[in-house]
Length: 307
Image (cartoon, rainbow, N blue to C red; front, side, top):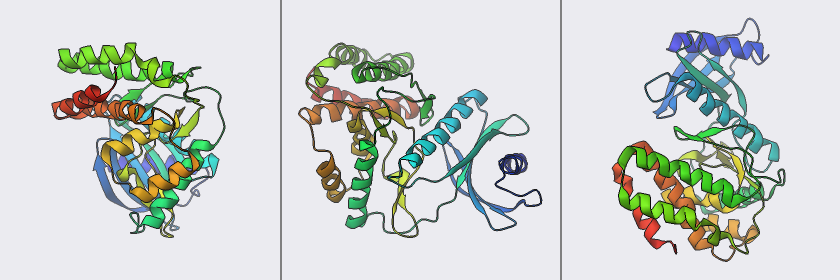
């Protein structure tokens, strides 16, 4: 794959005027490998450095699905960067390998620091994330294109009300659970939640916020100046509280983060129950992606909901 990837990336970067006609890639190094593809450091002959993710077509991901994932990531990075609230890697381009067997995304390579858990940095992250959520830009819920959460498709059709948007998201996850596991308890409790979803949003003023969509400690770091950087987004305009679902699911952010965030966006009535719903969404997704080990966590969350 690597030769095809290098040729394809160079072609796209030259077309975008990011690489000169005589410039090329002189060396590469794989940095990560996960379910969303291999992550590689590319360096050009003039010293430019790029972070390149690529995935080959496989039984679970067609070429169209891989392109949806990477195009969604690129648009997400562009949208967050445009708010000028928190740093994300600059996205350059997405494309198809010249052999049509996979796709890739090219973005800025960010040198990371080593103080991401420093309380002052966590405080800065909480402040900047709240500023992102407070940025105005849409009067509806959704996004310009669909994207993925991990490898799971996420529909982002523009919707007037948040409960309607969220209901569609949850229904899709429960549908996948039913198809894979046919667990009567999860199916029944899921149907009850969907039927009673509106009660959790009565008398709550919900305005569309641009959210990262997949934020946890693994998608956050600091740059070489010690400033927060977030990446691998699955962005959309949604309820700002939904961002905290994934953070709560995995942990990794300390009290300094939460104190700073809630200073700018205080908790609204019913927050704790809604946080469970937003955490459930990610637990269901992990059940669908990684297996039955997450079913007990999904049921436990459903049992704590007042439905």
